[in-house]
Image (cartoon, rainbow, N blue to C red; front, top):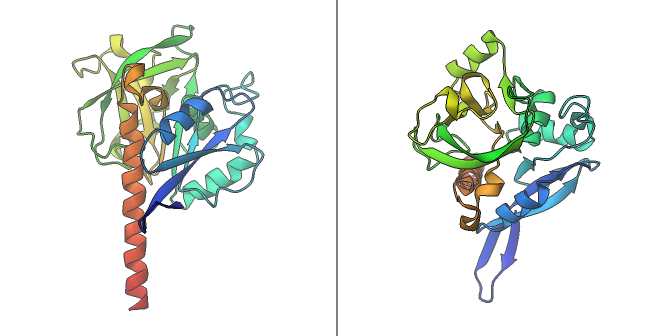
Length: 258
């Protein structure tokens, strides 16, 4: 966190978000602008060759093309030095968000199950889609009632989520499917699926519920001038989760001292 001094005696605390930059990232600036545009947040770039994320409250892996994606999206980026910290911090409970290519990197790194493959149409898709919230009150959907709709843009050629039957059953049983593609009425139908993802899955979390990957771009839907503010709900939910975790930590320390 960053503590800033105001003109009086009051201080303001800003949560620090790390936006990981890979050589081919092209949505890093979008993520930085979206996060810094929200009160109480401060985002900074972290180059992929860095090795520590200790000073950050949350981590964002943005969209783009990382590097080495000609082999398989995210397959090479997952070996970047910074990914050791991303993995260790995620396993320690820090919130990690991966959008588009970031989602692919998280799957390749083993932080999320399944894989992202070529769109069924074999074409690049760039459009505004509707997603339905399947799990409310997750670390990333506070304030989003179950069944509510989020309008978010997609822009990808390999965004088709796939998982084998056993993995899919586990994802559903553990309520790890956070978002599904739907029509404007909230119906999960084939016509609302932009890439052929199995069961219209748009975003999933890990079993511990602190790592979230989605193909749509919340960073490109955090400003009314872009046609939607729904993406900001995801970032604000992260703030709420982090604040609650910090409060719980302080309470626990007080109990230990007492």
